[in-house]
Length: 96
Image (cartoon, rainbow, N blue to C red; front, side, top):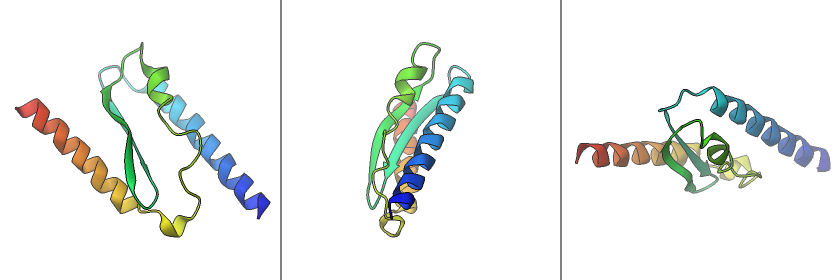
């Protein structure tokens, strides 16, 4: 069991490093957001325009540890719905 937890944590660390590199290559002006999920969702980072000055702070909003380790309880469709909702809210703000 311990090796499974270690492997899962190692994957999370690798994912965070990959996201850090991705955030560094995203052009300025692109909107980034982070939605965390298990059996529910939370917006860890609302849509935010990436600049050369805020990339470190944006990456810092990604949780350091996964919210849950039981994949049976995670709800990726909940996360996708939350992302669509965040995007729609952004469009409403821009359209108003």
